[in-house]
Length: 110
Length: 114
Image (spheres, rainbow over the protein chains, first blue to last red):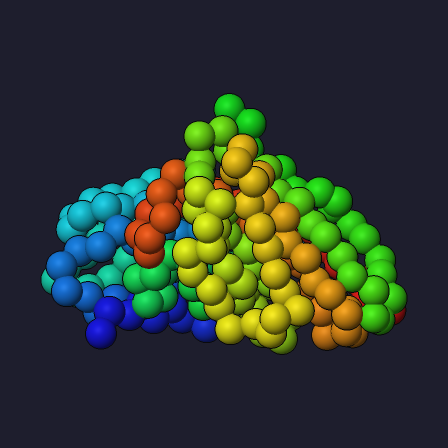
């Protein structure tokens, strides 16, 4: 069946380092994929999304491309900041929008 | 456009009490879903209401209930509180029901049960 697999964390990086959080999918067709972010003490918010194959979502310096060749939707950022420390969710893990995985916690050190 | 509003933001209860949490969705959104987030279990789906009807339900005991009003505002209630109910409760709104689409989350209500 349809599924999304996200790398486990935590991920610890130094400020200005390059970030990749892996997310791969198995699906029939190309359902929409999302990256949500949850900053400490807050609810989730949509970071970016892609609705079809080869779509590229981008926001706040983050990018993710919906790649059909590699069935991936990896999240990338060229230079992370301390303020990017948060939990990132590639969703939905079973293509049902109400269900989330445990996310990947990112810690960025100054 | 105002976002999703949850009240109260913080509350403390004791075991055996009950609690009611409120969620006002984005204007025009008819779907409201509720989640429990704990460090050990992550983000777990409680239920979804659409046009005053429960459309989807997660795997929680009957102590957890909800309702939705005609203006799409929703409340969830937890009766006979247990220590394990301490969590961040999030609600999210969406313009449509069903398994696809984007969710818009509130800031959450943090419940502590003593």
